[in-house]
Length: 399
Ligand code: NDP
Image (cartoon, rainbow, N blue to C red; front, top):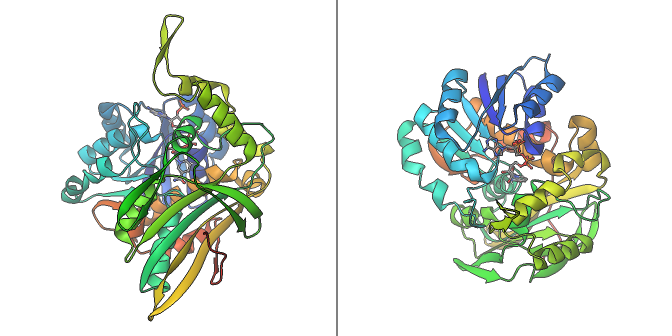
């Protein structure tokens, strides 16, 4: 049905590419393009020979002209951005110039400020609408499936949703004292930032890891979780009817937190460049270079993830609670696509989001967050492509 240009060849891209190849009726042809072409070639070598035709290319996604030239030569129907959040705007610019649909999994972040919000990408709304193309923002798990879950709950279970708690539990153990499950630089920027949540239409800010709760996760058990700022809070508070409060919690083990604190205390998580032996280096980028590559954690990670949303709202005048979640097993993912569950739970929805656009199931020009589309075909595809969801009408609530 179409051609996809996939930018990036890291952990998430690898899963997305495996999944495109499992869905060849929709993904007839893909081009894998990234900064390091050898990584694209390695993925092609692994997956070539099936029904989906694969090619590769080298591209610097910070350079709009290079992106435009690549898009003009490959002529994709959709560009799936699985590079880093720093490249969102240049890739959107190239999609606008060539009138091609755009999908990503993380909102734009400027390289020199650890700050992520949608304003930069929402500023493209009118231009995408006028060009008749779609930018689908945040088609990973969180953001991504959490937005689809919210739209589904709104459509089928509630007249209004007043409270959402998004709970992200990774109970996987990779055996290292400290490693991150996706790009270490992006991950550490996210978890060392101040926390925040939305209450009564206003952001409430907390110190990093200030708010801790314990939650008994289905199929996992009790885990410590901490309130973080997360990008989907911003869009869901606008797009879901009746929201009074929306929060995001992520689980962290004690070893991870102790190492993070220590790295912070010695300045290793800083993004301010320093002089080192006559060269400017960014401590966090140096730290990334010495930490394990998340893509290498697959074979050694055991355990499960449970990510989902607890909704409290009203249906027919009565208060109601509803919990939608997915449980994913690290080793099962590894057996299927050679990656751990964090890359898996992001790469699968990235493929599904692009498939929604390629099949025309989602067809609304402009820049949209995922919860703005009909959730039903996406929910069906989650069951079909390895992320089945479960529901509970009587969940434990978060204080
Ligand atoms: P990786 O670091 O494993 O992969 C990033 C890839 O992008 C690498 O192949 C890298 O190339 C490439 N890249 C980086 N800069 C450029 C550039 N300027 N030009 C071309 N290619 C470039 O990251 P992940 O796969 O772990 O994460 C990918 C994205 O997914 C991130 O944006 C992350 O925030 C997002 N994510 C979203 C989640 C969600 O649930 N919504 C959860 C987890 C991640 P090279 O190999 O040369 O370094």
